Structure formats: C-alpha cells, structure tokens
Length: 514
Image (cartoon, rainbow, N blue to C red; front, side, top):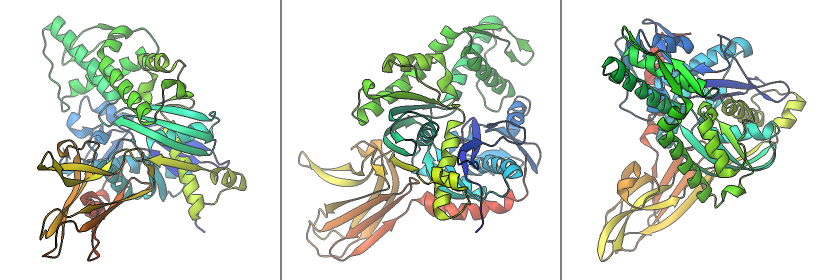
C-alpha cells in the first residue's frame, strides 16, 4: 500500500499554513522553505517564469505594485475578477493554486510526495466560493479529501489538544473573513457544530484600511496632500503594510509611533490604542452582532457558553477580547496559536479520512488516536426554490426553503409542490441560496426548466429533493411524479471544474514557484 502524509491546509486571505499528522498521531505545523510557520498569501511575479510567494512578495508590493497580488481569497467565486501581469490574466482560482503549490512544494522537501489534503474555507462561504477553492486545490495537483469549515477545524484542534468538554463559541477573526460557530465538544474526539454565522468580507485587512485612511487624513492636515486609495499604487500599499504593523503593535502597547511616507513626503504620527479602537468600532460591533445571531440560532444565552475560543490574527486585538469578556463574563482563550489552529484541525481531519480509506500507514498509537475522530458540521446557508403563491388574491413569486441554514450535514430533504395551471407544460427548476422569502434578497445558483406533458389539470405533484454533502456541495432533483421524468441539476461552477483545470494546467507547467 502506498502511504502519503496526512495534510491539512488553511488557505487564508493574508496568511496560509500547512500541517501534518506526526508519528504520534498529533498535528504539527510544517514550516515553509524560509523557516516560517505561516506563509504570507501574496504573490510576486518576478518575471515571465518565476513567481515568489510569501513575505518577500509582500515587500515587493511597494515598489512593483503591478506585479504583486494580495488578498486573493476575497475574490474567490467572482467569475469576472482577473489579475493581469506578463500579458496574461489570472483568476482567483489560478492564483490560489499558486499559493497552494508553494505550500505543497515546501512541505514535500520535508515530508516526501504529497497527494491528498483537506483544505479549509470560511464557514460562511457559499457554494460558488467552496467550488472555487476545490478547483484551486485540484489545479495545485492535490486530490481533495474534503473541504471543512475553518471554525470547525479550530474546534477539532481545541478538543484534541486538551480543551475541556462543553459548549464552545469559536470566534474566528481572520485576515479577510469573520466566522463564529457554536460547537458542542463531547470529548477529545467528538465535535458537533450547532450553528454558524459569518461575513466573508470582514477581516483584519479591513481594519488595516481603516487605519491607513486615518494616516491619509494626517497627511492632508500636515502636508496638504490628498492621498487616493489605489491598489496599483505602491505608496498606498506601503501605507496599508505600515498600518498592519501598527495594528499588531497596538495589541501589545497603548501607543505606537509610525513614520508614513507618500513619495518624498514623510510625517510622524503617534497612534493611540484608543484612537485605533474608535476607528474599528464598526467592524468589532459587526462581529458582535454575528455572535448574537449565532446564539439566537442555537437557542442559547451567553451563559450557555462554557468557553470562548479565539482564532485568527485579528482576535488578538484587545478591543475584541474586551467585547467578548463583557458579553460572556469570562476571559476568551487562545488554546492554541490563533494563526495555526485551523491548519492543525484540517490535518486531524485528513488523518482520519486517509486512515479510513487506507491511504496512509500510521503507527498503532497514531491510528488509535485518529480513528476515534467524529465531526458533525452544519449548512451555512439555506437552500430553496422559487414557487408561485396566492398572496391576497394575487400570484406572487416567493423563495421557499428546502434545506434550512444550520441543518446537520450530510443532509437530504424533499418537498412536494404542485402545478398551478391547466395545461402547464413546464416548471421553473430554480435553486436559491439565502434566508429571505423575497426573491430579491437571495442568490440564484441554478435556473433551468423541466418540460411536462400537455393537457394535464392543475395540482399535479412535483417532488423536489436536495442533498448537501460534507464538502458543502449540492445536488438537486426535480421529479414529475406522474411520469417519473426527472431533471437533475448541478451548478455551473461544478460542471466547469474539470474543464478549468484542463484549460490552465499547461500554462502553469511553465511557472516556477518559489
């Protein structure tokens, strides 16, 4: 039997990390080629052939902004977004695969050939973003064992490294996304997710921008220089980079002095922690609202939470910790390094799956630990379909939910609807994602039709079945009960997955990733 290392990857907005299960059955971080435990998710296209991933790429942004791309995870799922360099255009999927290839290449130098991996995503990623992440992994040459949610992975790390049983709130404030999950930890090996909330456009980079805008205001006051935000301007990127450094410093001290420059102009600014906390108060309040939503979804009061687990670099901010302490009446904990917890949990899941499938050889001790892992996650969004209803004597289009948000997965649900009109010859097979009954406030994942026989009366049954697997991928079936005719649907993203990989693989063969 071929044996491969059990790999978990946290593909992050600002930093990414890779972990492996060691001989003792425990997860550990694998440092990159530069000896760093986490890798900056930035890419520098040095020339037509060479791409550099990591801190060096970040440093190059100031003087070669047109050749550096960052915060790629923010663009996952956007089919129109591209980064143009070297007369080529790269999608977020292709760029994410470059980061994954860097992680894989560096780890293989220590571990040998890597074939399989578990990759994490924010709990609140929708299906389009999940499929995009899966495609990036495939393009990086990885066979994806599973996609799991970041807070879920962190909870798995918490449980497996001695965290006490109980109801845990995982507060995951990362570089580009925010998630909160409420988790029931039965013991070191049994995890059940109760509810999740989140915002995939809220993270530490937003806080950096808030501070950078504050510094631009100082430039205007002291130098009468008006600074325009532009991701292709090296001075603006340097200002964001400086703001990130100041932000991190203010987690340790009450004041940080910085010297931002714009071209040949420089000023000296003393940034008080209180000033920074005021600048980011809206973002911190937003996370608090999402925490409250998660508590409501789980039918819990703050007193029902036994521990608050901090995950993600932005969870280190004192204002965040003070808010959580005030709400829950206890100090939040960083049971493991907030930057590493997600990758470690993904490795545990990879070990379990690979041991189960016979893809790795573990020591008896490691196998005994890994094989007991049990993980129950939930859906992050509701899935429904459009139906026509009689509302006050008028036909109105409404969104009807079939699989509700926070349903344990894997899940399979069916509902029966009925044709509305005489001689109705088709039905709209729409698949929606969202919570609102108003069609205006939900996303349409698929919109096709199922043809029906002519001459039938109204009221003919149509059975609709949705299934949702552990990767967050879905299948949809619309069945005309009378004839047995079935329309099976997959999202356009899923259908295009392999085609995309085949289209760009050849181009990627020419790239050297360092």
